[in-house]
Structures are given as C-alpha cells and as structure tokens.
Amino acid sequence: MPTARPLLAAALLLTVACDGVSFGRDPLAQLPPRERQLCRDAVNDALASKNVGKDWIESIRFREVRGTTRGRGRLVGFEAWVRPKEGGGAIVVELSVACQVTSIWARGLR
Image (cartoon, rainbow, N blue to C red):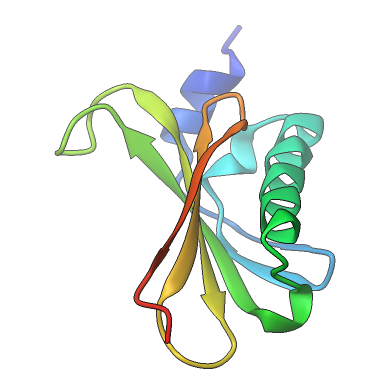
C-alpha cells in the first residue's frame, strides 16, 4: 500500500482555497486532509505572527523543495510563496516535510 510521501512526491499541483485566500497549485494535494490542513494552518499562523492579514494577501502558492538542484532528489520540505495584492515580491514561509515552519523571509517586497 502506498504511503503519503511517495504520493506527495508524485503530486504536482492543485488549486485550493483556505479562509478566503486563494492558494495556487498545491503539492500538498496528495496528503491526507488533516495533514494538508496542518500545513496550511502553519502558514496562516506564521503570517499572523508577522501581522500579515488576509486583506494583504493576493495568493499563496506552495512549492516542493527537493534535495538536489535538479528537483529529482528526495522531498525535504515545502515553500509557501505569499504574494501581496499590491506591489511586487513575496513573503516565503519555509516548511519541513512535517509542515513545521523552519523560516520566514521576504523577497522583493515594495
């Protein structure tokens, strides 16, 4: 019987929604619903801890992080790219495979 991780590694992306915020294509789609929601909640909590509200967010796009530069290595975590409604750039929330936040950083925010 397949486990969630190989299925997750094979998953590409799916559009989902969470609390009125549009998530882009989602590599978390193959996780069981409880674990998938755990990841989304971790991102929402991380953003709330930085005073980033839903009204600031245009979209959130999850991306798999692989252990090699060619994207063929084992899954080592996820990134959630949070785009603002106005201006450019993003806030990036890095997550472990277990959906624990490992870091939060910004790129090109105006």
